[in-house]
Image (cartoon, rainbow, N blue to C red):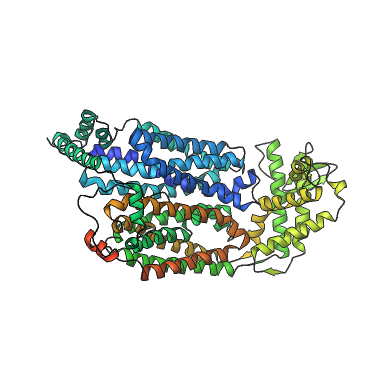
Length: 632
């Protein structure tokens, strides 16, 4: 009997592939939230904690990888996927509702567990349920969905940024919206069947045959059932000792294989790919283009990633693995050095017009926020002035609003802007080549001006500058000077740094954007996909499962380290030096690809093993363990 329902496996695989979408979405959605929650949680001055809050999803993914095999074998593929949808939902809602950074990090870790299980189980399920002729492209569809999820996350962040102005609320929506597709995924998973392979493992033969009949008809079901059962019976008789496999994997004859595998795993991450994806808006804000432009440029990154990933699917079997690695490493190193160069050429200076614009912009924003609190429908004003204890707002020469109640904090914030203005005026006409030195000088001048006043006279009410920010530390018993020092740093980072950067920086932002896009393009056609394509080819059959697991662990550990340290590198070294380090990493990758990596395109397993190992050690009777790439 021929199968009439050819769309059934496509429908099932499409539902399961939503897991790939969620994986990509959760991986980078945090990039848009970082500029805001770092102030909500008061960690703007703690770059290492910012890094951990972003990279914890990678650590969770690594542990999820380790648990995925046990969970999917014991409870089934379908229940494992339902678990991932629950983890994604809890992670999204938990981070959105978090009241402190430690609970936030815990929820990121929970989301990471979902990532780690989903990246293994989703393609495993698809490969087990899809007919042989459809298996390849349906599994690839899951990988493409990961990149689509990444791109949609950037779109979502930009849209929410436009819709919600409150900086303590917008990031919560950015993260919380991920619960919607996760819950939809959970509901859709309820209608898919269990994997027929797992059902046969559990001796549920009739149920397995029913699923196989839906996929390909009765003839297909009987034939596939017999093949799966025979394979499972065979693997059951031949239990491999994992200790012996690890010993063989690290033996002298497999040294070149492991060198290539581990080398590609490390270079894939020291390229800085996850640092750039996880912190894209923050990087683009450093060019002075403004927040909206930074989020829009992040969308461009996502689109380029999608296009180049699709292109790599066509190139990898046409050009070969090694040529793509050489081409991609060259593109990446050039692009990273170009980005580093244009950041190094940036200068920072302020003139009278810049300073006046910053002062008026900040003051207008402070007064407007106060007016909006009293009257959400208030449309705006041109000027303000203090008249007999009232803040009088005028438009076109006419009074449109008077603010007189609870304005102590507003007065304190306006005084802060006066201190900032005086600090900037001391640097008028000076040019700085370092963003860090420039901002440090402004903050030092602010502190000098502030502490020249009598603290006891100006630190006992909300109308005093920086008191609202320092109050919490003072109540904890912290020294006054230390509390106000910290308050000035925090207020500067949260409220002043971005507008000052936008007004003062002189940089070719277009070339920085092109450098980043060039890097993304080079990565997407080379070390990104090539590593995962080569690992199953260079590892002998019986060592493939454990080999990819170990190498994938190295990949995840490197990814966690790079993503965690990136904010600290920017803080201590600056953008130019950080991107230069990544560039040198890709020069090393180019040399490694040219001198060490061997081409595997068009070669049989026997030919690859003889070239890399010196002998053929696989045989047709070896059990091949199906392993999918770990999260990176």
